[in-house]
Image 1 (cartoon, rainbow, N blue to C red):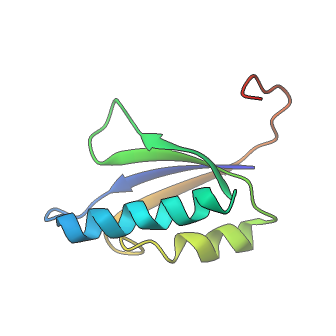
Image 2 (tube, rainbow, N blue to C red; image 1 turned 90 degrees about the vertical axis):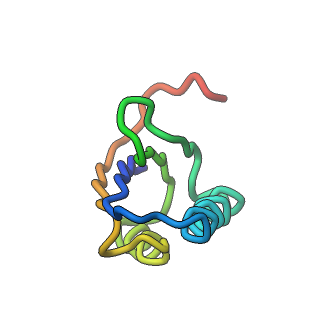
Length: 88
């Protein structure tokens, strides 16, 4: 599993870009690759994604499809193993 911390760095974000960004994460949520998606409450124009994919290479390929990649957002990716889960 992976945690993705996304921070938009673009200064002039359009509604078209936000719509495309939302469609991107909805597509992978619907496929079951993104398990949790939501905005950060402590930083504007930032969000967290919990992803379950086969490997980092697959995740990098998915991230590269975001409308803000590579120049208009930063993507900090952390790998982790969930030992406890209260979400089921």
